[in-house]
Image (cartoon, rainbow, N blue to C red; front, top):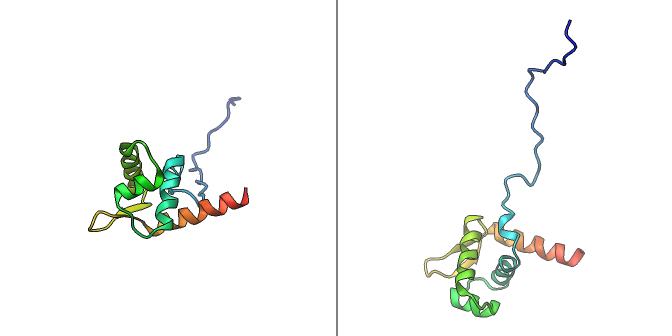
Length: 103
């Protein structure tokens, strides 16, 4: 009889989390959170109006972060290239507002 431990051949049950699959990358940066807030306040915003409203000194950074937010599913563009939040983006904005009020 060996003293070693026996490994179970049973597959481990994966623990699922309610936030699994959500992209928090889009919310991890202050400028991206400000973009979400600005788009939540206004229905649709043209790129340069957004840059001016954010008082951003580097429009290429805003452009990059809009791309990140689009890939995360928070932002989309309409046929006239104006930016607006998706339903997930609006939920994220409301959640961020809730967190800010209750910290």
